[in-house]
Image: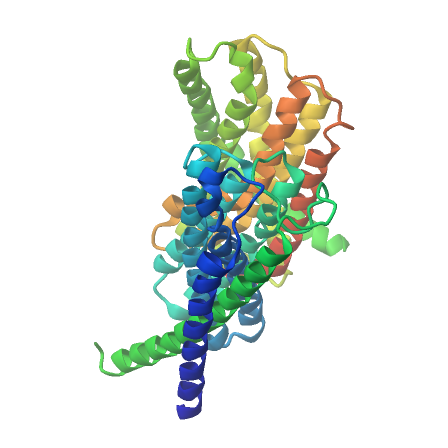
Length: 234
Length: 224
């Protein structure tokens, strides 16, 4: 127990440092985007927050998907805790990505919201995982809740890759940054911006792992609390 | 294999026979579908320059909303009558039960569609029905029934049951719904299946995906 406690402390500290450096790089170190209108150059820096949030949410849903499969195979409480922790984080990162995207869209597209396929499919992904927690909330018996939630978690993930691909398949106004076929150097950012972009992505990865580790340890505490309540007929 | 198909057929025939005697599901679905088309007509009347532009949306939304009514009953009636225990105790592969019920649901929704399409042709005064559209509708409905049946089994185990089913089902159905509506728009604008292959493939791909995942997970949904 104390070892994992210490690991958590190290992770928390690492995440703090990484995020502080990320903020510095995104706001000060990264150069202005010279190819966009001067008025929206400050807003362009949202990319260093928006893209890593979106990727972290995809990663979170992927972890939830794998954990759901593992739960059905092994029936171990561990994987249920993983699945619900990762889904929760996925929702948080999705909301972060949607809000930061709107903040950028106002100056860039002159509207906070547009019915673009990327935005629509991503919002549906958010609803999918809200439905996941509604399903959990509607079942009282823990093992049945875990089992049915795992089945839903698997179905929910099926449309996540579609959201990711939607900017390539549909005519959307959402920018494509990585591996853009219309861009000769395959990358929509200059070399100096690229370093910041990469670093903020790594920082968010560390943040994601840290939050997940904390949420899982909280999940175990919840389990123990439930077991105690059961014992005391609370 | 023969035995497996016998079980699928037995479950399908059971559901059909219940429906033929009570006509509960079909009546509600069909009446709801007509109502939905009426309400859409009121909503768009004089507001939309050309009513034919809303046909793809009206068609798919009506099918989805009326379909979910029937899907909800699929397992609720089994649970309420207690017959689900009998089904599960039968010494057969449980996925066969899934396929039987899925085919029954597919058939119910297809019958509602057969009833809805001529009605929409009359109400919107446009003949938009083509073989390609029928194929598209069949593929879309297949995916809908595939997920809907297993989610019906999921929802029946919860406190909120039929309220929860659409909330669970619609977001998962979205890829099929989106591709279906896009392809219907294309067909109405005169594109051929080859032009719209991307959307047909997407619906087909998700059908296969849904059926395979449902086949793999159905045991966990009904296990007690």
